[in-house]
Amino acid sequence: MPYSSDADMPALVRDHLPQHAQDIYRAAFNAAYEEYAADVRHEGIAHRVAWATVKRCYMKDGNEWIVRL
Image 1: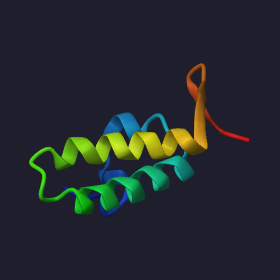
Image 2: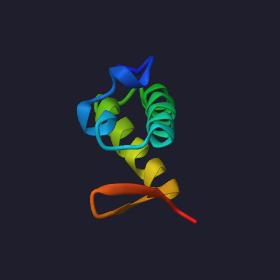
Image 3: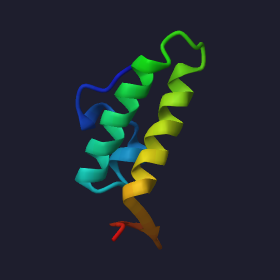
Image 4: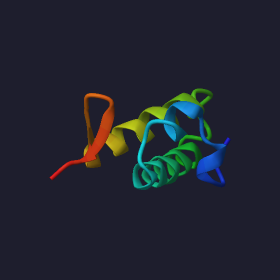
């Protein structure tokens, strides 16, 4: 189901990503969820799209997500 706020997202996202990255994740997830609505796997696809989108802007350094330069 699409997320209306960052607080609705899974703990894995909320507890580990910086606020801006959470916003990116939510926007990408919601867009992909709608785009792939006809596919029975749309929720899983939306999560993969969202993580890929975050990873284009952020990278993990140890346990911290930092902005890519």
